[in-house]
Image (cartoon, rainbow, N blue to C red; front, top):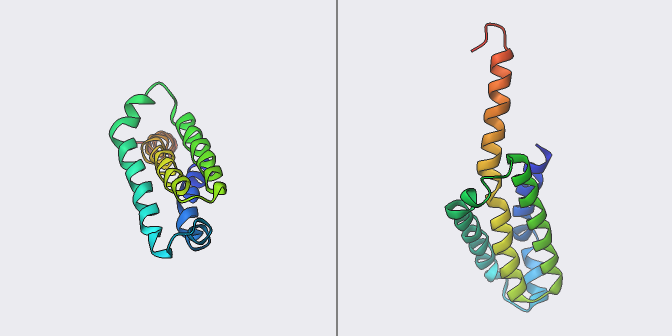
Length: 122
């Protein structure tokens, strides 16, 4: 479950650091909405096509892949360019998209195991 928390935390990094990142890129602070929109677009595109592409991977591997993709996208922020920030936001959204379907599958497995081991079982 630490991987789920990591992927979710990466999604929150850009809005938290938006002011210094936009200043470093020479863009008005109001442009942070564009970063959030790019991340949302990345997540939506993953929800449309991603699960079919990653069907052969286990849910834990999908979460690890999403975390690695998001971490790599954070490195783009080091460039200090607006285009790199937009691309990083989009790619972070793609990485974050893995969290919902994969963690839901993991929770169904864990929840089912715990329910079947409970006294009286289900």
